[in-house]
Length: 312
Figure 1 (tube, rainbow, N blue to C red):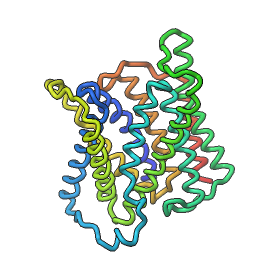
Figure 2 (cartoon, one colour):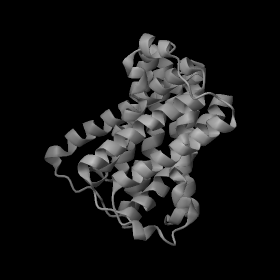
Figure 3 (cartoon, one colour):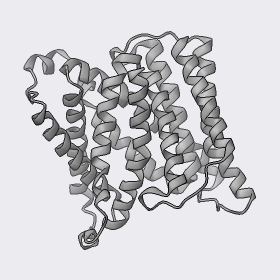
Figure 4 (tube, one colour):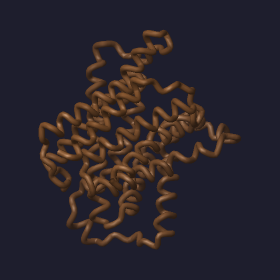
């Protein structure tokens, strides 16, 4: 039960991080600079938290020698997932940019559990687990795509995808691939936290790797930055890194409890709940949109899907 609560909370926080980082990206003029600032703030937050809790920063040399190299790649995969979404949005539109990665996350999460990849606990893929995953995906489609289609029919929404049909399927595959990388990151970070015997330390290592990766990207690209635009902005534009740190730390904590597949599914439900809350109340400068009955029914379908996956 604790893992479900943590998963839902960090899932709800994730779209808030997206809204905050999107605002920061608009201000500084570069998605990579905004991401770097977010990662740097998250790294600082985790460092201070580690100090306040009295935990050691040290990592035994035997861990570097005896553990697989992929254990340190979670931060890199996080950067790839972030960059992938930046590339997908103008090509697939907002709806498919949500759905395709989620499909990849669910698929990869169940495969990791079934085969025990990345030293995960084996949870055999039963027909009930597959059916539960299909219900979750159906709920995602209902929450995002069906509501979007209704709004288009009513003339309230304009299609945002600008890609021709020739390349559309290729970009959809890219979206599924980035989602699979996100689920892989979840499994890797969960194992990292277990090996280091600290969810905080595992999250910090992931953030340090991501921060260094983004710093190297900035050194290569050297984007122009509008620093003056940061003056007079609301205080919450700096919360993205802290939310990201809580998200990674929460994943590191719950994966050993319930497995990668269930952790991914729980977080996805929380993510969609958070998105609906932002739309309903217009948080972080977002436009207010009422929550529809279709969205509430879709969330219920997802909850039933989670119960089938969890109990089978």
